[in-house]
Length: 527
Image 1 (cartoon, rainbow, N blue to C red):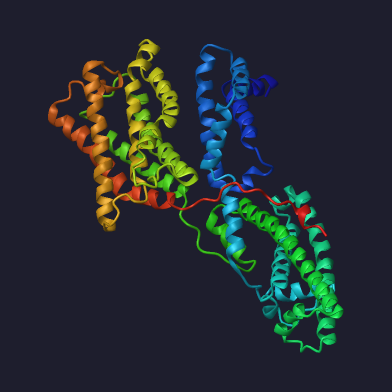
Image 2: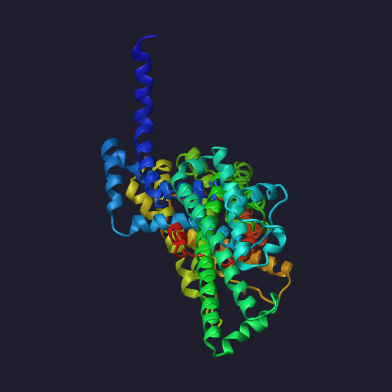
């Protein structure tokens, strides 16, 4: 086989996919704003946010080669990143949809609030590890009742498991070996400092008690030493204050190190596991008692997308003899299968994100419905759907003037706008309050189904005044056929979405997220 037979297929592949691949790689690196961005959320959520982030740029690239060469189109999209505000706002929004860095911060705070108990398998290893620095503990469970010793035990258990993960050559530990080495150095310094401080404070308190003829367990008498005005008493008080300050400074340094260890362990668990539930189980094996992971948006989005796709496919099969698609029928069917699930996926994810992050969909303190948010949230997603809709218009009606088709089909954007508005209306925490769950779900279904049907009638009215190419699908369809082929399926689709899924979205979006707090650095915990 000659070299030409190898080169020609490679040229054909790179001519078709080389440009899109360069665009994907460029915006892949733009998406990574933090070191180890992937480890701040679960892998499926990360891939979802990355796909949403890159998709508009790929769609723009699909149009540019018609006017520009592929290389010029790639350069245009790279330079587009220099546009002020918009690209970075879009990246921040997509990272929010992916839970970056909220997922890692939430898991870190869950670790901080969770109860902790050293596992029986870890106890011998911890005893040997701590005995090397002179820290002898007779009863590990009893030591957890004190602020310093309980923190020290938790830190040691975390470092023990991190050491095991590093010895297993796990990818996250290898990629973040510099940070792990810094934490390990701080921990080693903290071990010797802890032993020194605890021994010094014990000797100070023992000397005070012995000199004052106070029993070892009579702490009330020890506190009363501050009321005496003798020189010896004042010296004892100064020594007691110094011991307390040493313990307080040690506690603060331990808290700073724990803050970093919690985040590092949470990122390691998220990076090496597929789901949040498995990540929490992995952290639970260290000794933390964590609640089961709440249902996230990813499963909800998958259910919505799957249902919408199956429904549209069933509608195309069932109405094939009655409904005749205008333009290229294959593109028209692909349009139905793609855009309908996207209407729900993007708009529900957008409302979910804005509700959790900014509480825009909540009622005001005076009980007023957030009308402004309900009416405008759909405007955030319409540019995305405008690009997707224009692409399908061009390929579905290749023989018609492009601008004319795109312009007359603009009213179709009422669907993404209306779906976003209905979702924002129904996800309020007080929606249908003081009603039974079944009643709330029935009303969700009626509102969503009625809203979808209303938007269909509005499009019909617009089509009568200004014909839309896509709406030619309803031309020459008898009234009864239109009712059973369009109106009833539209209402049924909306009712099922509202009845089965809106309550799920409302409950998931009601949880209070973790913001972007200021991170403590490991250097704060140094001796």
